[in-house]
Image (cartoon, rainbow over all chains, first blue to last red; front, side):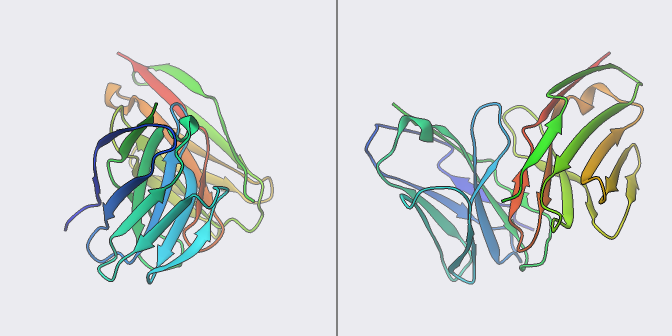
Length: 113
Length: 111
């Protein structure tokens, strides 16, 4: 069984730039969620993708967008980066839409300078 | 939306003692409550979960209790060991696998 993998592991960007983070879901999982974890905080829900469509969104502006591909992998795109976007971005996969455990990747540490 | 509060933010216990972490939630429609353990620099990992039709669940040294009326749930770790030291997060979900997390409890087990 292949776990959730994310790339890159670390990234440094300048304010105003754009970034794309990638995630491969665990085998057998068809739902992907993205979370932002600021230092010393709990993960905050950004959005979720199911069957290649956004299926739920947290309190994040439209400059946070995403995609899910037919193989259930996913991308998180952030435009017009701000300093406050510096955080650990966690991807989590799960199966279906009924409540089931999230399986997290190791995350991408984004630093915006 | 859902708001999850978690206490305490830090907790130190002697090895072998018990540790209790408490969470409250605001949305009465929440029906699934997992707990995650996150070691420094690692991914959050599920340690136990409970659904709203159950009041208590136990897995070896770890147990979770749920009080739907009061809208709170708790994690209990007995016979703590140094390897239990980590940050613990509670979470609540209403539907569709969209989770709202608490702010975390940093547990230190002193040998």
